[in-house]
Image (cartoon, rainbow, N blue to C red):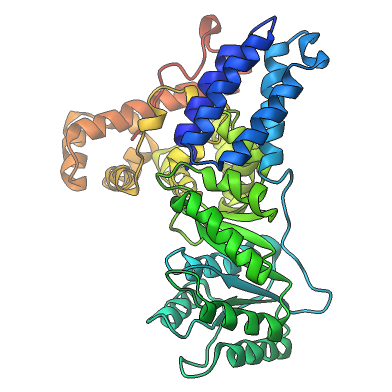
Length: 452
């Protein structure tokens, strides 16, 4: 996640104050000094940091906090609330026109991931809001931009409107809206041209497209990896075009994340979506409160639940739950479960949505890639039906055969079987009505590790 460094620093600072029965002005001052440094290092705009620290300090030394039974917790609550306010307070929903289609203009500099984001947004509107979008290829300058959008459309099974690269973007946009009306489509998402820098020619053309299409949304796509520059780009586009919202891309990259914290405060425009990876599903609605929770190590269970509802086959999950309760789970079921989890996105990202995940040792260095999951798949697929249903029968010679068949070392086969057994034991304890405790009050999770 983009806020890795910032999250670590802030969580460390919060932990120092969390359990304090008394909080003095000096404590708040020291804490604010560390918070200020953490935000500046994360590339948050200087003025934004100054105002943030001022507000939090004033609220933290107020009477309500000082007289509270848990002043340490109160201060953390204030930091969370102000961090949420800084990023916009609440989710900013995408516009819907009274008369369809709703026109969305996607704008931004070259290299920010505009075309890919256009495809991701169409996918999100169709999947989560059950809308029918039309993608419009209006970037006639960048070689292969039209082809790229058409490929995405084919991949997602979403129609793409194109008139090639010899027709003006204004004419393309005009005709696309007519087409959407004819076919009763809900959204027209226009992928416009970008440049490597802001220039008059680019802005002139975008203003023309805006005039002709009267868009309900002008979404600015910004690369969060560019840090402070992202904020400057947002200011320029907003001044000249009047953007309605921002989409931050590459928020999963190795970036300091300051752009996400500064853009709203500097431009006054809401962050509507964030790109969290390469996959077409990796575009999320931006929830300032959930992001603040993630940054402060409080998890983001709501987003995790939403992901599961969209990406996981609910019927299969109910069946899996039944098998877990009856302790009749086979290795085939386990493989099926892995496939479901894989659909939700990178496992390390999912785990970070759990409260307190930041404190789990080794999680920050954990790299779970599809290759490792592929190894588990290969091992299980090299077993006979009988072996998958009854792993206890897998003796030394069978293990050797499975290792040969899967092309994996025998140690990996042994590890998988051992951990599958541990998991079954754990499930048995949990479904045994022990209130989440194993024998002698021990945590049923014990030393169980994921098998990769």
